[in-house]
Length: 382
Image (cartoon, rainbow, N blue to C red; front, side):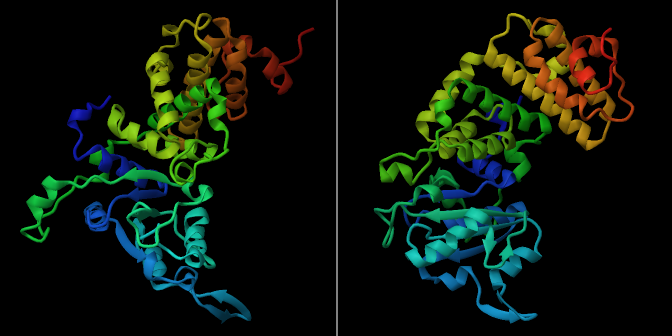
């Protein structure tokens, strides 16, 4: 596990780096004049990302759709210059500036980019991340609260001006500005990190299903920021999976910015109390778990994580038989340890994707005889 003290930069920039790696749309909130856009452009350049800034406050709807032109007997929208540049480069960031100050007619076209990643008739490449920048409505020119469906698509991040960096670089006009790489900020991400994040969140939501209710807050101000829904929990899982393990400060910002402070606090309190197993340790030695006495939420998280890690490693194709066998060994231990109900869904899923070279053991046949019989891979008992 990474020691947070050894990670570079600030939690704000680390969680932004995680959101970019996870390709979750970000909405940065901050007062005017605190170098939001300039700082993000500078960091993108250091990360090797091409950036395009499109200022919504001085644009019309056509600037986010393109002009209608005839092509092969059909009327389609032309490609915009900034879209072409994003399409032709490698990793890139589209920066939608003055997001809370755009006219309603322009907003509808701009929002479609965030909602569907479509610019007129053309879809943004998957290598392009989206960052919107907004002033709070009370300080923005003609500012407005975001509509709930728009707000819920974003990871919301409050901007904190880095005085030290500004003072160090302003004299040289930022010529010597340097920033840590994305990997330095987030660590080397792995399948296991991603699965652990998903398994923790889904185990928590098993206990608190009310936090999956997509009803937005009744207060327009709260509805225009982060609140819990299936979509925002999915965004939270993606960012958490992209952060370095142990970066608790950045993880807290990710949760608050996706699902709101109330839901985030509930999750973090539960996470500490839950003391979840590390699925990789269990894959190495299933005997470390007291299967029969395990709490339902811990068991749910562990079995789901083990199954998902095994699936993803099999899909990668490297040592697929070993990865599959290790996952099945854990599920057999769960079933024979007195919890076959918890093991059955994962076993059924893995048995349906048994890779070439992986063999059914006597333990697997004994633990999952009913599943294998229904699949026609064992003869029915006489």
